[in-house]
Amino acid sequence: MLRNIKYTLLAIAAFTITSCDDDFLETKPTDAISSSDAFATAENMALILNGLHRGLYSQSQTILPGGNTARAGEHYWVPMGDALGGGIIHSANANNLGWRTTAQWLDHTDQTSLTNEILWYHRYNIIASANAIINKATDGSIPEDARLKEIIGQAYTYRAYAYLSLVQHYAKGYLIGSPATDPGVPLLFSSDAPYTSAPRSTVQEIYDQMRLDVDTAISYFEGATSRPTGSAAGKSQLNIDVAYGLKARIALNSGDWRTAADAAIAARANYPLMGESDWKSGFNTTTLPEVIWGSNVIGTETTFFRSYFYLMCNTFNGSQNRNNPKIGDKRLVDAIPDTDYRKDVFLIDAPNTNTSASNGEGGWANNTNPLYTTEAEFDAAEVFYRDQYGWTSAHNEHPYMHVKMLQQNPGTIDPDDIIYMRSSEMYLIEAEAEAMLNNVTGAQDALRTLGESRDSAYDPTVYATQEALMDHIKFQRGVELWGEGFLYTDKIRWDDGIDHAANGGSGASEVLYQAGFQQDRPSINNSWIFKIPQAEIDANPNLSQADQN
Image (cartoon, rainbow, N blue to C red; front, side, top):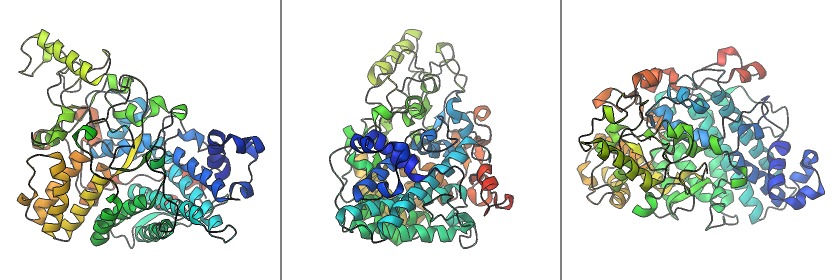
């Protein structure tokens, strides 16, 4: 099918065995691992899964022919959701890794862009590897014990995860289109080269396959060995809670509200909400109590200047951060009540020390903050924030800059873990689903648990209609999940456009943001749909130029 899918064993399993299992490496060179060896036992298939786990955050050239060091999996894809949706605001011009181009909406609308191509092939590599496990592990040749069931459950979950990503980016949103006829993405069931796919299936067919996959995963997990607990590495493995969380996402984005609410409740059961100290600790480890799933980024395989924290963490010691502190949308931040401790991670009064700031107000000579009446006070504030959060003297500061994501070792180039799923998200999924069912009390109850843990004066009963609830849920998702990658798909589900100028402005510069400064709502604007890579259209006999979005 796809010219950029590597043979599963050589790309994923061999990579994993090289780094994880020296004994296996000693018995056979990694470039000679056979399919029969890799799939001979459940434990060998677990090595392939470990390759998928690491492939989520590795630089793409390690898993894709033609891959590029500028894209390191979820390090890029997670913050991309907030960059495209307009939640992460660039305070100055910086284009490392094409990050500015992404925010300007010049990247995903180009069929030859690196982002479009690598995201597509990354997801299909996951699918091909999952297929290889599923096809072998369910053919009856290996006894189906609890360990094998765990592996099969993870493979089905990965396949559903990859299809959800593909259909949310390369097809029109389920709730704003005609899913029975809208073109989705190709289904791939092959586990061997040349990976021949079907033509583009409909959006509905892709959602049907995802539902089948995630339900199958849950059924296998119910009889499987448990995921290891108590470590960041353990939470990189998928388990029944991840599968329920993914089921909740699939249902939410397709309007299956009851399923969404119920699955979200199941997913979060074992993950208590964080308290204030944990919430403010930097979101840099998957060991936080409410993290359901995330990548434990291993230091020896780090991506350094390709990491999630490089792209958006203001303590990271890279030019992207030193020159361009990331800020929150001023309209969102200003709306957070003072009784809500989440407001504290946005430094509203940080001095604007960047003379290259896009708002033209950088440096003491352009200061507009009445808190600072002298240059000495301005300079003292700069030092205060630097000392408190640990960035270097070379880092610029900017009003509304965030400190939600903080490195464990601030001022370094350490990448830290990537969080994919938290129990907070599940409360918000439940609340949205109940609101859409017009169950006002049910939605209020879900919001109460989360809101009271964040805001000492929280009262959800003031949101007494479906419309009021949905407006508030959008706000809560914006605050709670800021920077965690959900805004792009949220806006598609809600059919909300982007307007950085509205209601006093977000703080973004129209000159800097270009097309990303304002976009009509997704139902009438196909620019929200990623272009299919031209390389795929050229290589896949089941796709033609007529299939291009």
